[in-house]
Length: 301
Image (cartoon, rainbow, N blue to C red; front, top):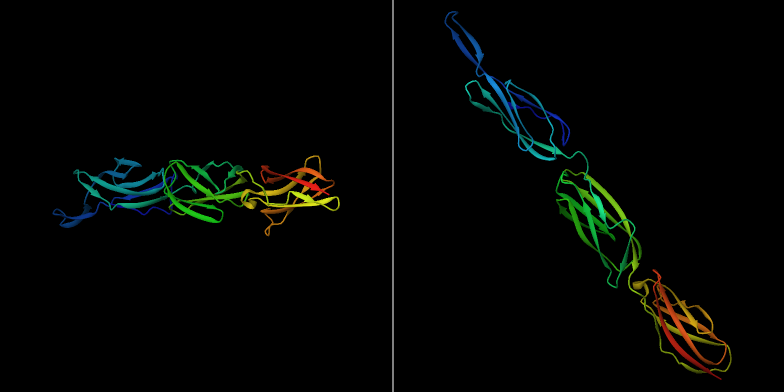
């Protein structure tokens, strides 16, 4: 008994022929009447048995082997066993054949979270984000799951129907960030998906005014009051600083930070007359959050 090599690559869900050869062998018989030798089959097969654990068991009452169509439902490694049953009830076993079954296609996964375009608010130390993928039980596991975020790729082995992982987002940059997931099965089948999240500053900005002389004697009008101060800059996404004088002028301050992130600013405020003025400095970040600081200045001639 022998099992013929399977033809080519075997794929889950695709029928494949398995051929069992049953050789009856030969013996020589001396025919006294004819005074000659004659050959006969050494055994007579009455059944052929084929077994693939977890897939199929075949009992062919015709005996003598044959070709049987089998469909492997799932990828993985299988052992095909066969035996011939003779007319005296003995079993003649074939050498088992190992069969590797490939997946019908590359890994399939659905992205459950985060949603594409989801808005994520960052704190001073960044944020954490839950990545959730779902897969079906008929996939060829284990997957190698590679996740790429902010230029860093990490890899994990995964088997199951839900992949869950917590990702860490750095405090910068703000705006869209791409998350890429690559799943690879044991045979090298690969599926890659990407989506973006939109990162906002989740911490309100702050603004401070540097110490200044709040009681000023002037010699001419209008007087240009110069105030300076600081904001958190890039860490809170500040994009504008403005000044406003109660019942007076308003306008934009200047960004004096070396890298243009508004971490330092200067406001030149024209005061047209003498008197006491209430000045408000307001910083606005990229998500529309604001913070204000106030000062009072008195002008004398």
